View 1 (cartoon, rainbow, N blue to C red):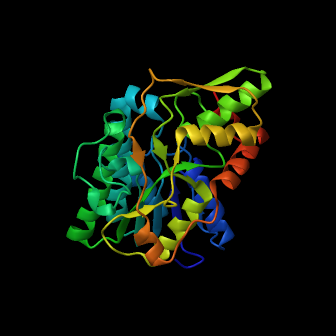
View 2 (cartoon, rainbow, N blue to C red):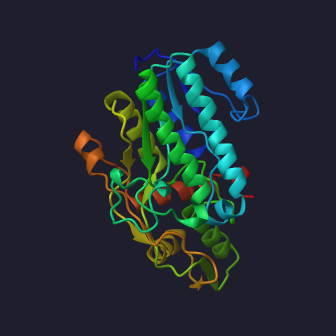
Length: 314
């Protein structure tokens, strides 16, 4: 990408999209195209077509999606499937119609089979059954990967796909039921600390392991791959290390300064036992994360305290 290239960040106001905007601005890119969902409904085929006809972006980061944690995924199954399919179908198809030079589709590590061997290699896609609680979201993301590959094969489009691991960072969603585990726990521990509570309840057994990547590191990886990677196969983006939910809770307890105890609600679902990405392909291309978990959590907690994500705490 040239510094004056017209770059569209779909989903720019979300955690990932805003991290991409910060990274691109930091690297000297100024011709960024952004639309909030109130200005452009990416689920609307007609509106998306009109947008691409008018703006004619050269590069597209497709970071827009309906996202949430286990409960949200399992409760709003139809919404997660329909809305994500519509968003990505409209953006990918119109990127082809209007000659976008390169598109990056951001998926999720939940695309891999529930019981796949660890760490998860890119070639494990579609080799087994998915985790039932987030199957609709995973199916939508798998369709996005296959759509990018199909448009590449049929039309020669330079559309690539990347699969981030679990993310956290600035402007995260801190809703107690609809957010992901790390931001939900940040809020739980903070409120327990302020309320002088004796304990914090953690959903599940605490035994599942998860990998966490700071969102600004993801943005850095995406910009790196947009400039370097041009193949059809997807690329995992992660740190190559994971932590149990129990140990994560203990780390958050320490950082936030909560002095009570932990209790685990085993009536709540654990989800996939483990989701560790194999990032050897990404490392081989020359990229590695720079923000360790403790440091990233401190930044995220500071952002939470600063109130920039107040609208996401409800």
